[in-house]
Image (tube, rainbow, N blue to C red; front, side, top):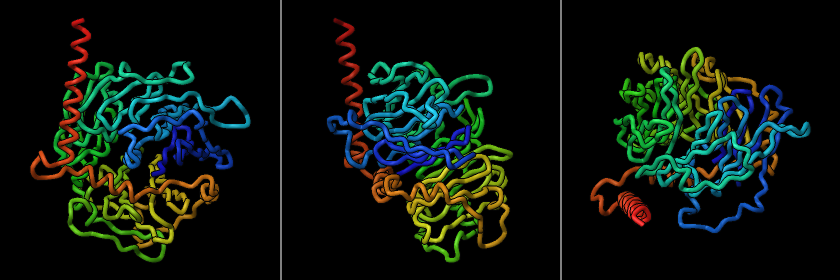
Length: 419
């Protein structure tokens, strides 16, 4: 799936196929650039972990540093491309280095100084962004922590007392809070979700919001890992006021299954309030729920369900930036929606003029966005644990295999040390 991200310097980046991306200066959309790395040296021997669908699971794989001076793009071929502002007046961004990882990344997070890479085997790697090395190949020595489960999200946290941590969310319903840089020192776990934790979003230096396949959003306080509140998707979706973008409504599946109420995607931005955009599985193709943290905490039921007519296509991805929500559709249309205006809207229909300059560029054949939503749905469903006899579950078989691999690593290390 193509992803959107927006920098603190107001550049919008859209990921495309094969590690390519297109970036736009939102202050002047005439300033844009197609970023396509030289893939002539990218071909690598296919390994067992390079199954065709594994890349479709990935989220948060195109990210800017907080200062907006670096852009990291996952190439979906075990290579991550780092771009910096260009010195050439003819371009705006230039490729600084290529980082080759051991296994395909499943999530990224960046500070201004370093990059954190989580992979689907449960390992986390760190690399310095200030190094002058053009190309870098990560090794086992760059691994700073490991898990027994697939990692789905990662975030660096600096609390208001200047403690530094790494947050990791996994398929085993857990959020781990590990000290940085000594990540082997675990501060605690945020426990409460009943299914995989797909997203962790920073609210401020001491609070995070997590999203899960169990259909809940949970607010946590750090570093004590205390659950402050829990918000059920069934509750806020059923009490949302529906607003249509377009003249006709779109019918979607709304049965009461746990899958349909699982959280498909979430994004958060903090301004005068904390704005939250949420998709649930049943409405993922055409609807986004908009609310604020204050609204959820006070149960004001002032959230909105913004539904787009099917003529606009399927929602591919979206992201929040200050007061605006940017939404990308598979017909290459990019919408910008003013979040406070939608939350204040009491009508059944929302109308807002949109600058189509970016959409017109995205519609160019060369820049086709990725919408492999059918493959992603298959992977998403596989994240749910199989209930029943653990011995018959493919999930537990993979977990036991991971335990055996960890034990084998320990034996080899002990043998080397003894010799």
